[in-house]
Each structure stands twice: as structure tokens, then as C-alpha cells.
Image (tube, rainbow, N blue to C red):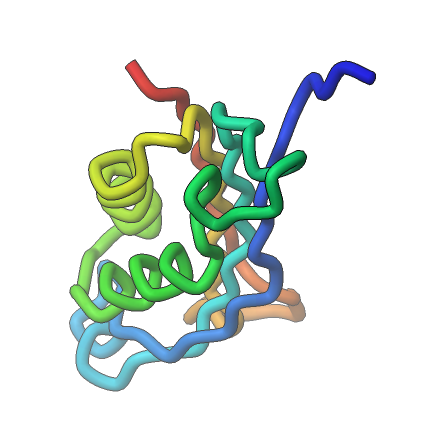
Length: 123
């Protein structure tokens, strides 16, 4: 067997944070949901059953939480900062896809959320 791709996913990460263009959004805050996938370039853990050959999803979760605590105007900036931090901390990560949703965006009408997705690869 040849493994062609190895991805760690964190889905439905639900956090309260203070992002938005409107000052009120950055002072009152809102709920956000993150779905993210991280392509791992080292496949060694698949056979040797050791954390040394992979990235702990708990550590990635901590990195996401850390970056979500820093207020930003744009969701795009938050996704970029999370990706940048993950790449700098975890050399095994070769590609990232992050979707960040604001659960209750401040606009009229019925809606589920407003979201931004950023996909990137390690340079």
C-alpha cells in the first residue's frame, strides 16, 4: 500500500472571540466556528504508532485558540495568522485549509453564518 495523503482535521471548533470591522463587534464579541485541515508530510507515524512522526491535534487546537484571542478586523487576517503560526510551529505541516465562520454576523435577514476560507501551502 502507498499512502498518498495524510490529513489531520479539526471540525466544529466553537470559540468566542472579538473580530470585526465594526467596533461593537470587537468590544462585545461573537461566537465563531472553525473547520480546518492540515496536510502532514511525514507519514512515519502511520506505521510506527508514535507521536514523534506527526502533529498533535491538541497542539494545533491550542495554536488556534491563541490566535483567536487576538482581535482582528478581518476573518481573513485571523485565518492567515493561524496558518502562519501553525507553519512556524509544526514543520510536518505542508498545507492548510481553514474555514472561519462568524456564527451571527451583524447584517439583516436570515442567515446561518458568514465565512472565509483560506488555503495555503508551505513555501
